[in-house]
Figure 1 (cartoon, rainbow, N blue to C red):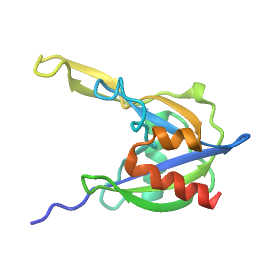
Figure 2 (figure 1 turned 90 degrees about the vertical axis):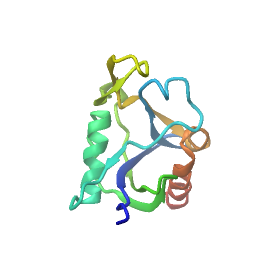
Figure 3 (figure 1 turned 180 degrees about the vertical axis):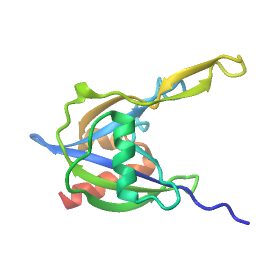
Figure 4 (figure 1 turned 30 degrees about the horizontal axis):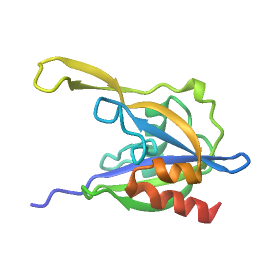
Length: 153
């Protein structure tokens, strides 16, 4: 029996300063610690069977950032990861106070095969970037989300 495809949902927050800026998140943990270009993402998480996709996007955004995504959202066309996971994204205009940022954590055996478990933030930092900079920073499969936002806003 084939394995069902996983689905994630997230929010691409944006604001209008002198230029359009988007909020991206840098993954936490040792694998991502020295990566920058092509490593940033939208805050997102797994949609469980029966969950509302938009509600999941809001919940995951809050869990990963401690910020509350309130207001009307614009659904963007989903994108697919190399693994086959489908990622649904919603654009939300919001100028968040990034000083309120805090992320949930995950545990990982680190260093590998050491027997020691360490806790790491799921997201270690967030920042607003202009679109040209964001296009360099975002993970490749999510680049179409930025292009779609640019067309619509």
